[in-house]
Image 1 (cartoon, rainbow, N blue to C red):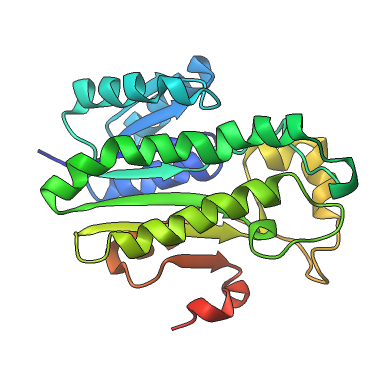
Image 2 (cartoon, rainbow, N blue to C red):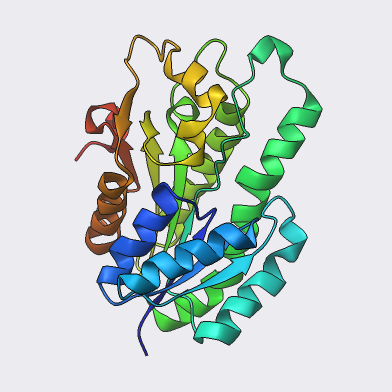
Length: 248
C-alpha cells in the first residue's frame, strides 16, 4: 500500500506544492482546509498530474474535530505516513505587540498551536508502531526572531516551534521524524501573497532583512529533503537565516 501524506491548510501556494512533490514520489494525498470548493479544485489539478488526492473540509481552529478528521483520512486511505501543517491564510495579518490582546492570542493559538499538537498526538501511535513517519510544520521567521510591530503570529509560532524541537528530541531512535520549515519570504501563488495585509508585511523591516518572494515548489523541495535526510530539526528559507545552534 502506497504511503499517505496529510496536508493541513492546503491551498494554492505551499500546500499544493507539497502535495505535488510527495505525490511525484508515489504518495497519496489528503488535503485539509476550510473551503470544499477550493479543495475539490486542487484535487482535480493533482489528478491531472497523476497524483491521487482527496479533500477533507475542516475548520482547523477547532481542535476538538481532530479525532474525526484523522479517522476520516484513515477510512479513505488506510494509513497516515506524513503530516504537513501550515494553515496560514490571506485573511491573517501581524499585530503590533502594544496592541496584542488575549483574544487575538487565543484565536491564533487554536489554529497554530493547539490543533497541530492534537493532530501530531493522534497520528504518533500509528507511526511509532510502524517505526516510520514524519511530522512537519511550517512556521514564520518571527517565531525565531521577534521584531517590532510584527507580533501575534510570533509568540504562538514560537511556542509551536518549542514543542516541535522537544518532540524531535523525544522521537530520536523511533523512526519517526519531526521537523519545522521556517520561512522568511512571501510565498508566490498563495492566498496570503495576494492579500493586502501580505503586501504591507512585505514592506516591513524584518530586522534589516529584505523580504523576498519564493516559489512554493522550492519550499516543497526543502520538505522532501528534510523528510528523506532527517538530519536536522529545522530548515530556514532563506538558508542563511538558519538558527546558529542548528547549523551542521
